Image (cartoon, rainbow, N blue to C red; front, side, top):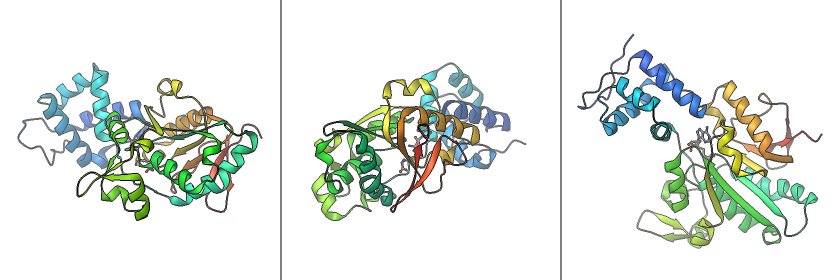
Length: 288
Ligand SMILES: C[S@@+](CC[C@H](N)C(=O)[O-])C[C@H]1O[C@@H](n2cnc3c(N)ncnc32)[C@H](O)[C@@H]1O
């Protein structure tokens, strides 16, 4: 059955046929692990009709041909399908768990001045890795005793550019105490604020695709990985690939924090759930 697009505008593009839609979803899945299908037709059509317009491709078929021969175009396709919803101090209990339980455990095998690497994957527009930096400055008395490296990664190249710029509106900042906003953010205009330069420079951003090992090769290994609100967009096969990659990028005994609706137990046996007072997190279990 061919369902006409609900928002075709006047660009003259053909409706997305069931097979066009399937082909596009297949490309997105192969390149990102994100699962889309008929049930998301409205969401897909809105984005594809915009992309057809921008490329002046006239039809979904032409657009798919462009996609097939052009990696940069696939990157733009993925960018327009990502869901970047995030905000500062999201799931704050995990940040508390980081300073109260995870880091105290990690430093048992480290000495003063040693490096502690924390990865926010996916970091979207930066709220998560910057929250980690702010939280540790505010809540971990040993923050200056170690060399803490925070890296933010995402598949979406446009959102990573925004993350590095560090401009935020009220929606992003709403969970932060006012005194923290005043100390770490400069007023930009009536609505927006910009994270201060020192904080912007405390996080390194690098593109990474959690289901594509090649894109992760240069990122190195980590003591703690925040992988929150990503696996929900994947099917089981993609979750398994992601879990393998996360496992390989964690140092032995390293920790992973997932979103509250996500769980590693069903995904991989190489992680064990650890119940700390503030949160349940997962620990790499390879050294057990
Ligand atoms: C809902 S945001 C989560 C942001 C943050 N972790 C949080 O919980 O607030 C999901 C992010 O996953 C990213 N994403 C989707 N597929 C990805 C993949 N294969 N590898 C890395 N990031 C991906 C999207 O670009 C989007 O920014």
